[in-house]
Length: 405
Image 1: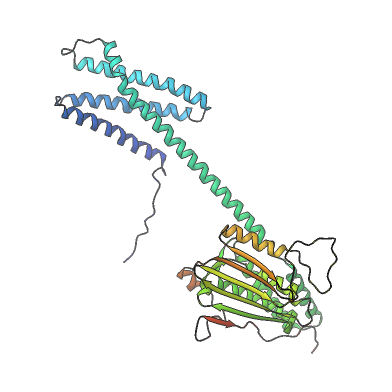
Image 2: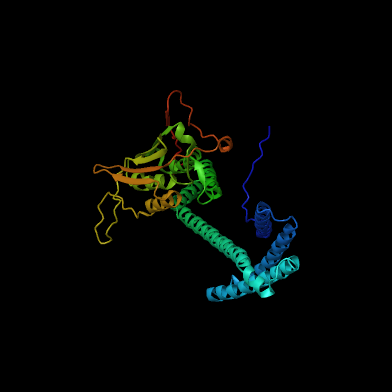
């Protein structure tokens, strides 16, 4: 059985229709209230005609007031309220005058009252009716104006956030791209076309993944690891056995959503400051676990470690210790702040004996099932038999670069 998707439509989505609905409902309620009061006081039925004429008069005058108020509402406050008071008094006098004339015709033989007496006696009722109507008109329109300004501000903030996220996404260090192109150039010069073509294919696949991802978009952890695997395949062709990886991913964590390209800068930092400066290379470990309603991600390396505190430019460089600009970590901090506000954790630790760890905790949000079916399968994830933690080896056969056949 098909399920109809019912979407709530705002009452003031069409201001013109909302105005007429309120007009008819308000003046209809006023007529009904006065009619019930007349009948309850055992007044003759023909008095309802007088009540109907009075209600139609108020309805018509309110339409004229709405046209005038529509012009006054955009003026300066002093002009708006001053002219509104003048126009309202004219409207009340007109309403009371018409009522006095109608009542003079209706009670011609029964009551001996002058037009002025009837006018003075009838002023309070139209004053209350038209005064209340005017107050509601301005209140509703000011509310709609404030709501429109709030919506506009929200859209501007969303655009600013998207622009900042785009800037942060495009800040990702392209250093690996230059190194990869240099490696491909070296392979071409050495006429090693097969590894050069393999590296170029992996580079194009990685760039395709990174370019199609919208700034600020959310992907599953499985998709993020697939993109990360493409990146690591490229770097392994450069560093060979010096780059070792160890991934430990919980089954429940694979469906978690996170900002696109969140892990790649962390792994890139680990390669740059742990694998590259050491002759023996280093191991990079990625752990993902679901703890309660939180997703915990840990990226560790066995490099010499790094100081996350700001470095004094005049301080001497310690031999053998990598010097970090901190751009990559600052990028991740800013992206997490944009995506989650204060509802996230970002910590870095560097041990004295070596090793650097980045810990991230974000709210756990499971991807929708439709997205799960559309998401490409990630090789090596979820294939291990047994319990919750899977060891995911991402170490394909190593191709040697720079050797002639």
